[in-house]
Length: 463
Ligand SMILES: Cc1ncc(COP(=O)(O)O)c(C=O)c1O
Image 1 (cartoon, rainbow, N blue to C red):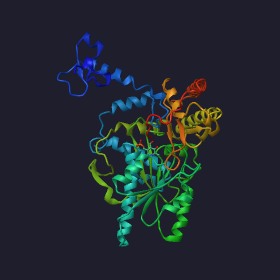
Image 2 (image 1 turned 90 degrees about the vertical axis):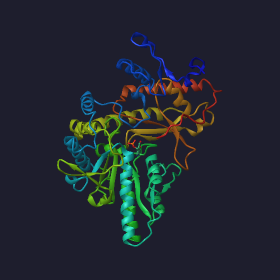
Image 3 (image 1 turned 180 degrees about the horizontal axis):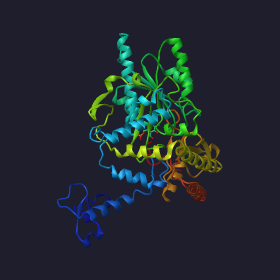
Image 4 (image 1 turned 30 degrees about the horizontal axis):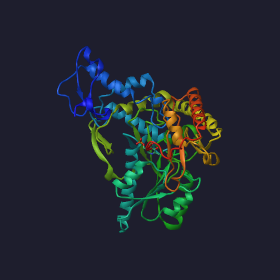
């Protein structure tokens, strides 16, 4: 069938209108073009298509940084060609990575940050896998030394874990033991943790900044409970903290909360540099408490300035420029700057959540006082006669460009649908007020249409 007769989604060629100026092209979409084209044409075709992605500042679904300073962008552009894995070839990029590791270890109160053990990664998922592998390896070594079976390792975590932990368990053949939500408890707690651990538990994952509602899990309480459990049973169960979002928030906004290496049971921590570390997508970190927390067997050695450097990674090549950008932020902002920026985001989150919580149809679940992320649900009574759900609100807001996802809570509370906002640096109080106005308008729209059939599901938002 010729392209003219096909529906638009099946047309297999890009036909740029302006091409007639220098070129008259039909560009295949799904196969390599036979001929070359001018760089300006290729640029324009791609540029125009990407404009349909929308405006990332309005993407309140993502945790990932959507704005960096010009100077950071300049450094990113200058170092686009650096492969992070070429440590011997790019020794200063490697040195900068080491400095970031030491700074992060110090931020998380590692006992000896000058000799910090860790690595940059492509994101928290890779970092979490490395932390998880260390737990599995250490458990296995101990079990072998005791002549016990190593066949059935399990990992204990809340049902609210991010999908990277499901992947970790599946890829590394570990039984996931997910503590379900119960009533209004959407995170792991100490009491429930103890019901799920046994001699085959490689570790417990506690989250600082749950993806579903932005809450911190009570790491210290979980750690204390595991201390008591060790006294009773002799089982020494480590904690890995998934600080994907909160790892670069809690040290600045809630320095009094003990969740990091101040707790001896915490053996490793991951965080996304590209979330509240304030770097564009492509960098994460995993830091181990000390050398003992990272089995030698997981480490590869690469040559570096004639010496030896640890290589711990799942990926091989990846961009070095995001590590450079992280270092830029560390130097440029310091503790003062990170504190100021996150405080500002939190003020926006608290103010907007207050505004949303005051609307009749909604009840707040979290208000953004842990990480600047909050969510709300429909008020039960209002929902009984409402002509809309949070899925309708999400769709209506999309017409204005806002991406504010609605989704069900995890296992055991799938019945509860919430809507979430992630406040980032580029989301100002002023813009937040505009969102609030648009939410009010969306409510008015549906209230004026009592016959509207409420949606029971939305676009398939995945965390
Ligand atoms: C708690 C948590 N862990 C892990 C991840 C995965 O992080 P990344 O996207 O950096 O791989 C996320 C992402 O949102 C998260 O919220």
